[in-house]
Amino acid sequence: MSRTPQPRHIILGGRVAVALTLEEYEQLMASRRQIGGQSARVRILAQQAKRTEQLLGELETLIREPAACPGHSGTAPEACPGPAPTGRTARPGEAADCLRCAVATLLRRHRDAAS
Image 1 (cartoon, one colour):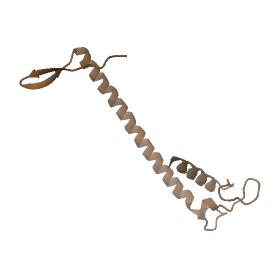
Image 2: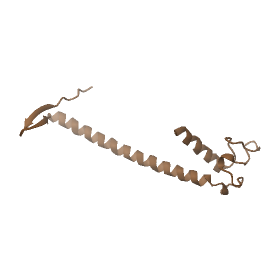
Image 3: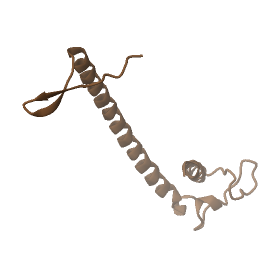
Image 4: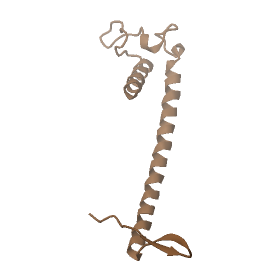
């Protein structure tokens, strides 16, 4: 593990300054480049996360509309009256054959877990 460089203070033109060896200066510049690269990667990941969150929000809005599901008569996806996999009526919280309701349930479960 390399040691943390200790700056040498000098007086230059009446002002306090720090003197670095060439090796210390090169290490400082390499560190700055690494931090700059990491900062750019974090910025890109944050933008991707924001776009993904917007996409999920729009998807949730689309699937929340009960009119497009033939099994719904004005009910929300969490109360899907469509048939369950066994052919009986689905209960709240139970997966239904309705893809719209299944996606809504999945989104809700993951969003609740993230909160």
